[in-house]
Image 1 (spheres, rainbow, N blue to C red):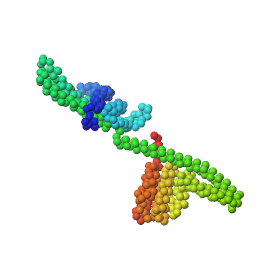
Image 2: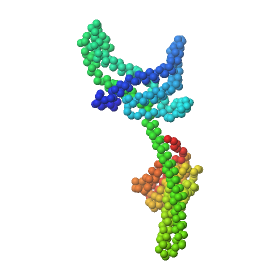
Image 3: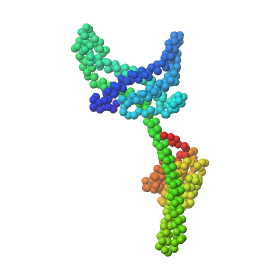
Image 4: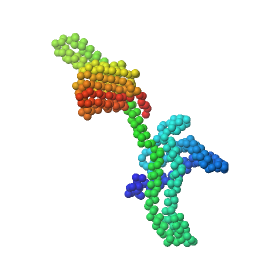
Length: 436
């Protein structure tokens, strides 16, 4: 339909593609119509027998509609679904955009396939298209064919006059070449419109087919969002596994070797005189090794606290509160331990929020509340500071919201000027399908 508006339409491939689509519609009508006729044939025979009864025609008509409709609704999808798949391929003749099926994956066994297909809206849209293809398209294309025949006969009218008598052209009667000449000019004038007629016919048919046979925009968006959510969950799981591996390697490998090195330097420091150059150098190395070991412990703790892994989220938050520079109260009410990924996101969200409290809020006290509400893990961080927290001012709130969004959660903020500031983090704990 867009190609019709282009100036070079007549010299492009679109008229030929439209003609190919129109010409292949006839075989499609026969291919779909033959099974549909077979489905309705028993009821047509029954109607013929019922009509012989001395009853009003309304009764056999009702029988035909009810019985035939039930039979087509019951068996029609078996014809409509494969026909729709073939029609989506044929749409490539007139539309370069991909046409996605609205069907969900179905089991290979017949019972499972029928159970899935008969519950899908896409199946019944395909059946509606099959009925329109058999019932309305022949009438529509028939009208187009009549118009094309009129144009062709008008063009050929001078050659149809044989001098034996008048010839009927369908739109008039001619007896001589002179009489036929106006019809020929009429057909010649309409000849350039034939490609446009075919293109409009094919374009309108394609639009109706795409409307009924392709996945709706909502379905496509829902499928894409589902794929993104599953991919995000897999990435979070992979990140958590990699972080656990790094923590394990640092704890069991580098930290143990650093502890051994610190002990050896301590023994060497004891054996060497403290005022000797060697003793002083070993003392400096020993102090640096202890400092490095403390920094390594902090690094491992920042990756994933050991308390979080072993004792869970409430214990890790209480440990975090014990290290705070202001009094922090922790209240936790969890019926069960959340998944590791959710625990990690909740812990680091609370840790980052408390860091913001210590740095920016000038608060005297803070409180952390953790609860599970119908599969949603909620973490609330409340402080009595000055308030006025604004994510646009670089206080770390944007990064906190991004961290929570990775786990399909959300962050809510209430921070009026003068305080208090409340940060609420909500993270789903329900199982998420991680399959591709």
